[in-house]
Image (cartoon, rainbow, N blue to C red; front, side, top):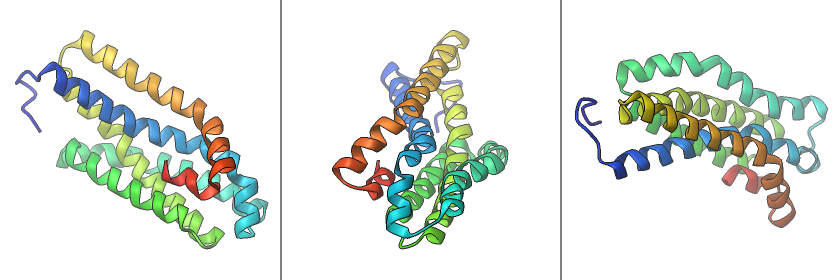
Length: 175
């Protein structure tokens, strides 16, 4: 990670913003995209209403439970290193979700996805803070980061519906 006192090029700042926004956007997309697939998941995996509720809720619960710890871990070990580890956890968990043979494995994989998401979000914000030391620029960058995540959150049902119709429910975890 570059020294925060050293100025970064405009391109480096834009790439950092794009990468952090992508990370946060994927986290938000996974909050709502699954809702459109519940009927298909229930049919394919045989889970009842209770299991389907856990498929949705487990992600959010683990995200909320680990976000503060993940932020503190980034402060201690370095936000970039922890962000990259979080992206790896999130990606592996997403693949596990797509390959889940039953509802129990899907619920466990969603829990791992939530942990990965909890690692990504606070550390992406910390990395934006390092990339944009100027208050005004940082304010704009954080606004764009949040706007992108809001767009992803609202796009989830639309994107999910399209993927389910074209490819199947497992594809929503491979976005």
